[in-house]
Amino acid sequence: MADPLSEPNAPTGSSDAPPAFAKRSLAAQALGRVDSVTRGVVAPLHVATTFLRDPDNGYSSGFSYARPDNATVREAEAVLAMLEDAAAGALLFGSGMAAATAVFTALEPGDHVVAPRVMYWGLKRWLSAEMPRRRIAVDFVDMDDLAALARAIRPGTTKLVWIETPGNPLWTVTDIAEAARLAHAAGARLAVDSTAASPIHTRPLTLGADLVMHSATKILNGHSDVVAGVLAGATPDAFWERLAAIRSGGGAILGPFEAYLLMRSLRTLPLRVAAQSAGAAELARRFQGHPCVSHVLYPGLPDDPGHAVAARQMEGGFGFMLSIRVRDGEAAAIATAARVRLWKRATSLGGVESLIEHRASVEGPDSPCPPDLLRLSTGIEAVDDLFADLDAALRDA
Image (tube, rainbow, N blue to C red; front, side, top):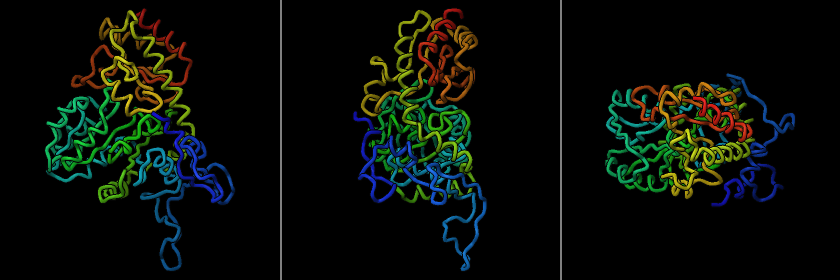
């Protein structure tokens, strides 16, 4: 596939600008916008919580109060909408969970949802607890099995199909275009959690999805210092307006300082994703056949079950996440994570520092995660150092 960052896009700067810029260029310059007061090349941080009314009691500036709207948030949303090819735009939330749960909150009692059996455990736990209270039925299925997905969809009743691809922490791949076809044929929307892919590798809206969600805490911010979430929409329809109203009414908007930091990170997103994905691919190759590793889970490997689909819908790489299964089992996996020196034993993913985690311990007894699995989030350190550190820990476990 062509690199989406090299595709031309409409400029947002001055009228004498070239007719098109690559997404990488637009991201680097935050759409080329310049502060109108100082002419600074970095947008200012707007922290005001309230704004003056006009003499006629209106708000000609477009801002009235900080809970529903903020100028700094708008700037970051514009960059995200550009990266996702989101005609409806983007909405920033105070966390990835706030963004994801807004979608389900927008449904009506009696609706039906299909979601992945293997997905972010926090959202799955919330769905299992909250959806019955709202009289919304949820079926969890293996989303890499399109026949199972088709069987689970109830035409006329299913209103939302939620997929996560690659799926955390087994990195299973769902065919977005086919899932969209199945959902739309039944009158449902397709929403995609694309946190592990990022808009650099996958743009679900161009493949037929209606909504895309990211935990912007992860690779979009990439510095482990912001908690945020984002929704991007294909169509500015009534459902999209409902999502905006939920965010506004519930006070779930991202704070301006966090939006400012996120904007800083989006300017280097293409470079970070490329470096981190290249590192993950190299580690996956090196750990294949390792005497202490029974399986490497990474869609970039040619023998991975999801590789063919991933190769069709992912561009420029296969992501920065992989998992390994330790041959000697759970105790050896936990011991390995305890012995690393460069990798950090911590939750989360997508930061410039590499993280390692024994996921079954985190998710608990209901986790579908194998007990011998270690989840790896590849940062920007030297790959030789990352491999040597984990190799030594595996051999000493």
